[in-house]
Amino acid sequence: MELQNFVIEVIETIGGVVELLEYGLCYAMIPEEYSYTFNGKTEILLAFDFEVAQENPESEFVTFGSFILDQIMNIASKKAISTVRYVIADNISLSNAEEKIKKHLNIERGVMKILNEQEVMGRWICFNYRVGYTADERVEELRDVWINLQNGEVDNEIRDNKSSLFIENDLQYIYKLPSQIKTITAFEKASKEIKIVAKESSSKIINRLEFNGEIIRIEEYYDEIEKENLKLMERKGITQKRKTELLEKCESYKLEREKQKSEMKNKYTVDIDISLDYGIVYIIPLIEYEVQVILRGIEDIKKLYYNPVLKCF
Image 1 (cartoon, rainbow, N blue to C red):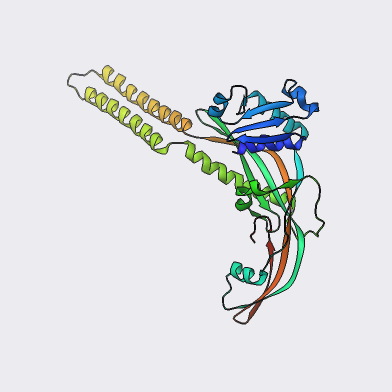
Image 2 (image 1 turned 45 degrees about the horizontal axis):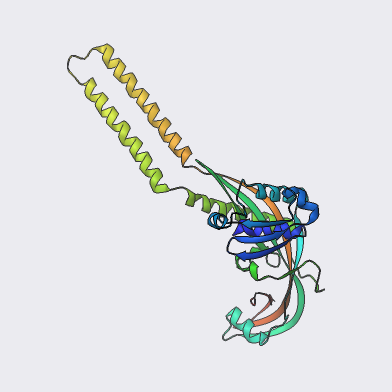
């Protein structure tokens, strides 16, 4: 639940503590200096699901437009949350490294040799965006885009496994930083990605079959009216004045047809607005491998990073 994760991250960032009690229900302890923001409360039961909120009437239901979320958003805006988090790794090592690297690189016949191995400080940036979709109604959602600074790519794997990252606020390891892309480059990459994601999500909001059905209904309705008008114009004995009136009606119906189609298109068009709420830099200890690969007489030097937290390259 992106909204729940966002609220928890903000509370923890200001020094609070959040305990997950069950699905959609959390117990939050707010630092004394922020109690005024929540009507003097330092302990709040937060519900992120409507049914859970109903089952726990003493809880505060957190959703877009709610008092709690508005206060959390105000805190996030005023503090301009952008912070660094250090991820703990229990064991920074890889057994049978050569074999596992060969498997990762899919090397069966070639020759591979590890030239160098060292611990480094890997960095990821999590950009959290608030995305709004406006059609007949407006809905909002929070979306994370993670950028791996080692290769400059969007990293959905670490995003999907972020719950397995154990965080410390203080630096636990001192290793060198490997070659990494610039933060502005990561931001540009994330901005492009969120636009693609938002566009895909907006297409799910609109029922295209329903839209096409409405357009067909409008076309058929005005086709019938125009047919009736033509029949009236073909009647014997019709005066020129009456004929002129019917022709004017035809033109009027054409304008009404286009107007209704335009209104229907607007109804089924989603306007997207995107804003960056915050960014978090995650420092994760990695093992950097420099390997030599010889395949069909061609030598290649590759650099790989093993993540001991997610147990993958």
